[in-house]
Image 1: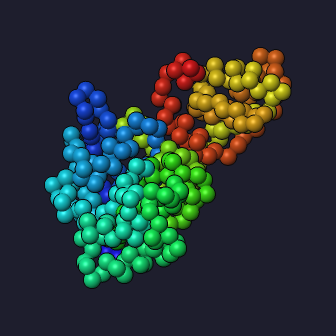
Image 2: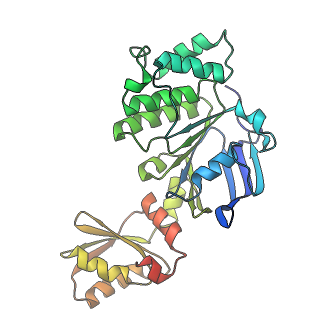
Length: 320
């Protein structure tokens, strides 16, 4: 396995990264650093700019502005030199459904320039690592979604890439297959691969060593999951009320409340600003004639996501 990056522990560095499509600014002056040998997450809603950013980072799309350094190479100028050092996988990664597992791997080995003397051994290694020993002759088109996903990942790493881009690769598979898939990602990171994974799933974001949150093309948060949730300490509360729907209507109208979500029979409330938020919530509920138990709760990544994507909106928009 080759050493990642340019010798300083950073596999990807972008400064002022911008992409415009006519009057639409899809990515807006993003600054980014992805540490080597990490699983780095891109979290954001559909249309937030995640896929566009990934395509620029791997040289598939030319930025409108900004600078990109990937594995010590200037992108897009040196994109051709980068291609043999990276892997790329999406939710719609194309397998040849009329080829067997082994044939798909052999074909990708040829496409990625794996030396002919090395290719058979490399295919055997991946068949064992990805648990296809009893399925190597099975046609890819007859496999389950989770099995296809594992094969797609094996194809993406056939050439031992130093850096792997994964663009929402697990959106179409069941939770157990997603869990197994993530175990494979951490095995790759342990072996020296840097991974950049885009997702809109909170449980996946929590698994990342570090993550960035994109919203409307803007990087609105960057840090470890613990750092990001720690920044919200004292801003999340649980409200237990006999009439949670009525309590929710009262709380969403408050100007400092960023979000109210019902979880079972309780409400999870995220509030912005300084001051005694606990008393503020209790007074609002009491003023509407409701009895409710309000207590602080440890923040999670969903709270972080709501906070960084909503706190700059106007109060009436947040309450909508």
